[in-house]
Length: 414
Image (cartoon, rainbow, N blue to C red; front, side):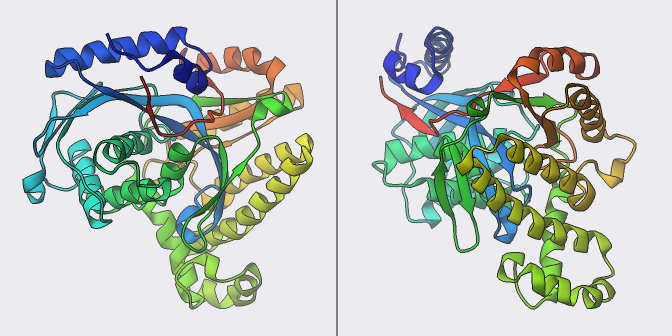
């Protein structure tokens, strides 16, 4: 039974025992499903957004990282124009005829997403033909750690390896995923999720002029802290409207200031024009969300400086301030369309009670918000106590101690 090279697995996962079992099972499932034993292996991680909540779509900065939850796949070309994918957790086989993509409806889940990616691959000048894939994931679905982007980057890696001689770069990967979500899934996503899943490690992203990224030597272990993700109990798959309103409202403010995105102006101009904008827009929430953009963008610069000095106290302080801004200004703690369900806000409040007792750490909304997960960063010695504290509220196996993974979306050599 085929599996990736164990030295490669050690580099990616930091261990081989669990990963060998996963890939042996994946190999077996692929062979059983498609009746063939020739295959290649791929992995793409989920991501954590450290700071920069909802800045990418308006040209801001984000500090993000790959995490040690990933999506894995076994795949191989089938010498046809048919894509066949079995993804665990989804009923049946997904089948696309590449000669008849126009027949695939939009906004119909995974099949629409894949069709959008194929369209993007060809639009950007690259090739794609038929292949078979069996996919399995550990990335939490609909919970703010980018299960969809992880899936998209996995498929991009397959298409790149099989059909394009590895000539596609990770920015192209990200744009393919964004195109599919924007045009075939009605989700006004930026590029942050895809970039963080594709690149590996901690990266500083700047979306002011295209997509620029820089590797940053940082993980919470260096501070003696642990990153913990808490699944608050409700997914966010049905919240596309809430997500789309954030970039739309920020751009309303930008348009009133005579530009397209907020990155094209300054806080000084925003402050100067504020009285007139409040009267013109009649949308206080849009104004507050724009204020979040300017202040959060500045916080990203500040945290990079704090990281360069390894000023642990300042890093935690900035993250805590970012969390308050998401709740109070960005307002993505809960949906006003269902304001009695506030799992994010409740879990943040409970976590704050714990952090007050230990007088250390911080917490914040993680990812898109409105539902899904929160992030807590606390001294490692208190991690077990925090998990036990939160379990009665969210249940067992809903609290994840995360590590930053240094390897992004890649083909795994055998």
